[in-house]
Length: 203
Ligand code: SF4
Ligand code: SF4
Image (cartoon, rainbow, N blue to C red; front, side):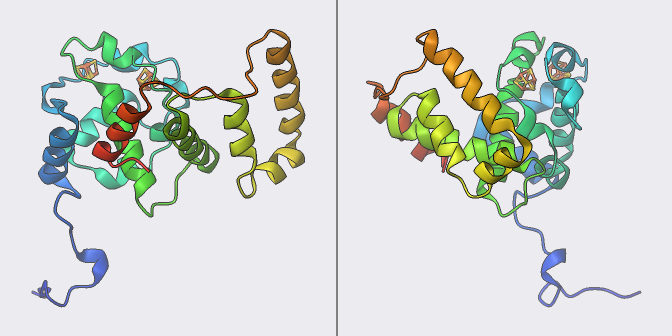
């Protein structure tokens, strides 16, 4: 029988500690503090999720895949980008499993990796959102959209599919209702937020 010498194995065959199986589970539980192992697949999290219909992996499946250490499937899922971080799943879990935090953590792991995101526009928006939050400690909608639209390819796509006009219409509506501020206000908790960014390794 043919055996592979680990020292000469091709890169694709090599496993990095914490990248799969029980080590991935231990790593994720250690980094989030969430007891993923307590899940018994009741699916209440999925039933509570407002966007479960748009996900390829439902919230309860995300937790199951995490238990199994299936990092590859999780990192390449649509779910990690579609999730709204609304925390309904967490609220309804009878075992107090912070499903939203697990998904958020997976999204940040994917954002820091070289993996091509399944939902490119949402991944781009995620980066811009986090960047704006780090700058001011809160997000100014006008500045957020301006920063997002400046990204390479975003404006071109929006001009092509007509969504820029829809954005402008919505912007005017919000402006008339006094919901948009021209100048962003810096949060008093800015240093605390930046400290959290450093601690979590975000951006
Ligand atoms: S609600 Fe909690 S226990 Fe039930 S499937 Fe979701 S994570 Fe698991
Ligand atoms: S945090 Fe994400 S997964 Fe949980 S209910 Fe909200 S959208 Fe669904």
